[in-house]
Image 1 (tube, rainbow, N blue to C red):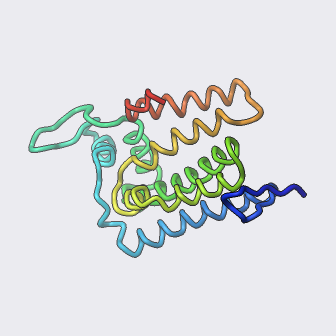
Image 2 (image 1 turned 120 degrees about the vertical axis):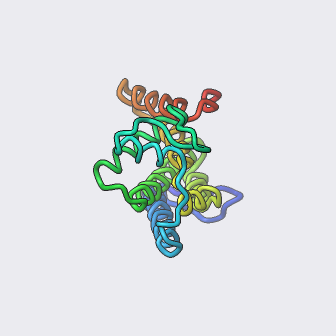
Image 3 (image 1 turned 45 degrees about the vertical axis):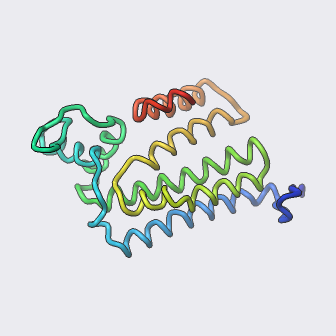
Length: 194
């Protein structure tokens, strides 16, 4: 069994078991977000435009929202609003649906960052990356107190990069990575710089 160790990190990690640690970190990220969100109350989460737009779409009012007594059409990021609409359509219009989805996406983000760190550097760096992303205060706050696309955006970018770094590259992986990055750019134009 091969072991890796870095001089800055004295903990040896077996290559066969670091995936289990990464899944454990992701499960911990999901569980802590669920616990904190449920403790603070999901009903008190602040909705952002995409969540409001999703409610308007399902009510038959179109893609828009009210702001300062003016109804704005197409003023929002379509990908997250569409995801919100689909989730609300399938599971009901409760904030807990998006809260659960945000916690799940954050767990996936932690695994994606583990894969990127492991692939580019070492298993130790991958685990450190997953722990840092799972415990990032900004992501944690937005996942537990706001219905906003921050974690969704980060997961799209990290997921696309992780797909690009796979050892077995295929046309499907290229298409999926391009889809992830295309949706990320459609969601937030500054991602074009990636």
